[in-house]
Length: 509
Ligand SMILES: Cc1cc2nc3c(=O)[nH]c(=O)nc-3n(C[C@H](O)[C@H](O)[C@H](O)COP(=O)(O)O)c2cc1C
Image 1: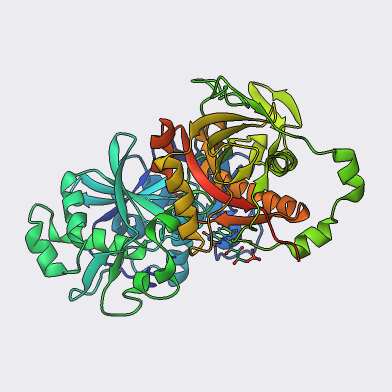
Image 2 (image 1 turned 180 degrees about the horizontal axis):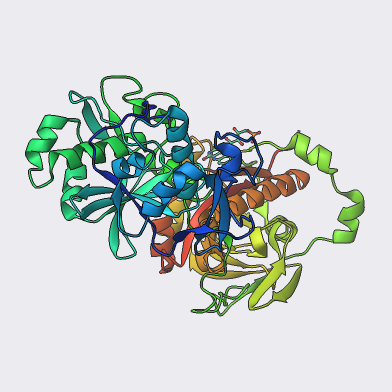
C-alpha cells in the first residue's frame, strides 16, 4: 500500500469491479505435490484451522501455470468455489465473494482475500472495471508487494485528482496509466477512460466527473475511482492523507526521479531486470573501443607505474587530503600531468572477449565491464597542448584532436565556471559521455542507472588520482547534453554527455 492509498475496511458493495485470469496464466485444482517456483506460500499467510498441516482435510491444492513455470499452492477448501469462477472472462468481485455463502465470517473473507492477493502477486489475476460484460479498464498488479482489497465505495462528497506522479503512455499496442506510487498499473481498454483520467489533472468532485463523462456509467466511475484511490493513482484532496504527494516526504521527489527510481529497482514493476542480453538476437554490441575520431593522434606521456607503486601517496593520505579544488594555480597544468592523470584513471589495461561482448579492464570499475564512458578533454590552459576539444583514446593512451578553441568550446568552459559558482575557469574540463548501447544491449531496467553509477566510480577515481598527483579536481553536477551533440554532430541517443569534471594545476602550500 502506498503513502496515499486509503486503508478502508472490507465491505460488500454494489461496485462493478471484476476479476479475471491474466493472459498466459491458468488456474486449476490440482493433485500435484506441493511446489512453488515463485511467490510466497499462501498456506502460511492464510488463517485456517489445522495449523500448518498441509494435509489438513479442509485444504485443496491449486496449480497456477504461468510464463515463469507452474506453482502449486494449498488453499482453504471453502475458497475452491470462488477460484473455480476465475477464468479469462471476468466475474464480479461480488459474485466471487458470494461463493462463500450468505453472511460469510470475517475469517472466511480474509482467507479468500489472501488467496486472491497471492494470485495477484504471482501475476495470475487482473482486476477489471466492467460495464455489464464490457471491460473498460484492467488493473494489472505488479509483483509481490501488491495488496488486494475488495473494492470499497468512496465518499460521494469526495474531491479527487490524479497524483502528480501519474502518467499515461502507449505500451504494447495499448495505453497504460502508471504511477511510481503504485504496485499496479492500469490498461485503458475504452478510450473514454483516458478522457476521464485526463480530467483528473485538476481536483474534481464526483458529481462533476459524472456529468463530464456521461458515456461512462456512474457505477463504473465510482469503481474506477475507488481502485485508483486504493492503488496510488488518485488522491482525495482536502482530507488526510489528501495532498500527500505535495507534502513531506513525497514533496521532495520530482516526477522523473521517482519514476526512474522505481523502474530501475525491483519492487514496483514486472519488467525484466539485469543481464537479459535483450538485443542479442537483433544486433551486435558496440565495440569496447570507440572507432578513431580523428586522422591525427597525439601520444600522451605515461607515468612510471613501478616507481609509483613504491613512492606514490598512500591511499589513506589521498582519501584524507581529497577535496574539491575549484580555483587552479596561476601556472597552467602541463601536458605530462594530463597524460599521467588519464593513464592512471582511465586507460585500457587489458582486453578480453566474453561471448559476443568485447570487454576491457581499466583502473576504475564499471558495471558488467561495459566501459561505455568516453572522455573528451576541453582544454582551456595546458602547457604543451593547444586549446580545443579532444577525444581520449584509452587504448593507445593518446588524444585525438577534434575541434580548435571556438565559441562552442568556450561555452563548455563557461558552463563549468558557472556551475562552480564562478570560482575560476578550469584548466581542463572533461566532458564524459556514454555510448548507451554498450550497456543497454545487455541490461534491462538498470542500463541508465548503471551508467550514472559508472560516472560516480570514474569521478572518485579522478578525485583520488588528482589528489595523489597534487592537482586540483572538482566534479560538476550539471552539463548540456544537447550542446555536446551539436558541437560534435553526435546522435543524442547513441552517445550522450552524462558528466563533467574539472582539473587544474594546484598551489600546494
Ligand atoms: C556528483 C557531484 C557533483 C558535483 N557538482 C559540483 C558542481 O557542479 N559545482 C561545484 O562547485 N562542485 C561540485 N561538486 C563538488 C562538491 O560540491 C564537493 O564534493 C562537496 O562540496 C564536498 O567538498 P569536497 O569535495 O571538497 O570534500 C560535485 C561533487 C559530486 C560528487
